[in-house]
Length: 531
Image 1 (cartoon, rainbow, N blue to C red):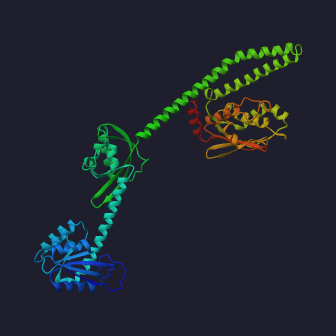
Image 2: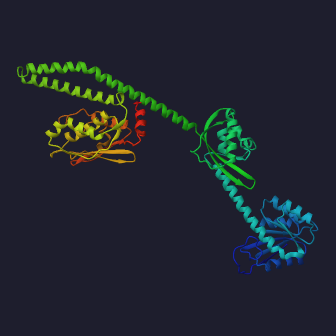
Image 3: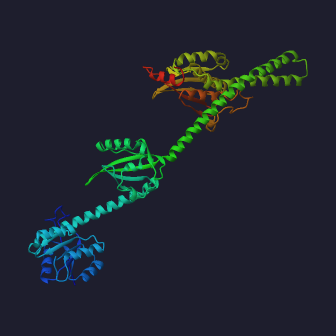
């Protein structure tokens, strides 16, 4: 065996061209020549040198030398004489295969019939060159190197694809155009209970319950005629069949892939069992909450209603006691009677507020086009005495029509304006009521210059019986804003506020705007039970 080097620096003209006939090769190469004729070996070396290759060169004559050389210095290209005294170039190809080497082998022979050459290429030889036409050898080498690089890239891409498929958290299947499974990953095995080898080669319908297989075939045929990507989350749920006969809901993502052998369908499978169970429990919990809220509202209504009569009697008799005996007994007796009267009156107000709260959901009217200007005028007329007593200034801007329950909308405005009148500071109340329309909703604002409140109170003030001040400072039951919030939410809106302690508060709430055609009004009316 001989090892020679011809590593003189060569100037290259650029990257290899597609065919490589005129470009100088770039990079350093190691060639292994299987040849027993020194003269032929030198001719090959000269041709490579003439073509501009930067290379090292080894020549072997026996199978043992060849095996040892490929193990110690793996070549970029093997150039092998087809026929040697002890063995042939095709046997060199067998050794490369046994060693697991992806090394192109080009046959270089003095005589090689066309039929024999074709047979050699079918068995794995990359190309063949006759010794009398060595000028073609550089072209064959360049082509072989390009094909080798392409195979390496394809192999890497296949390996990356395989790893991506195997590591996917979703089940991955691939079928051909006929619906035959050609690929399945480990997650698919867990989902369906089949081993990969049990699925590959079988129809995809094996994974679909028998009752829907015919429909699935129709859908698959329609998809084959008009293939398109279908992302997860944008497809219908599908019933899938486990090996043990149980069914489970799944969502599929589809992606058609064109290959040299036809179209393939890449299928991502996600088990929806846990999600469906979560949705079922959430729906059940929602129904239970709704039922519980309805029962609580009914209880509040019944309790408040049934307590009205005995409480009215208590209040009436305590009033009679005060009228008849005030000043006739001692000072303590007058004080105790005053406590009783005040307690009875506060209880009456509390029960009335409880009734109002329960009636928001039980005595609701249909949502109709409502003249907010007229509603506000009526509310201010009812608050006229409080406005005058507090020397309040109320500024009202033009208010648009909304879809509302007129009575409940009046409750909202009366409560918010009433609070602005109640919670004023040292200065006379200044209240502004305004509205603006945006994205089919009207946002109302009731602003005042009152005592304001801290931001930390935002989570409390809309809850029942939550008060920020004592009864001695400001009277009230602590239910008013809870009623307001319930009414606004019943109308499909939201309520919130901005406030600065000592400077004032602005309450905002949204109500659905009306439309010219009245379509939204009719829809809301039906939703609210108005027919």
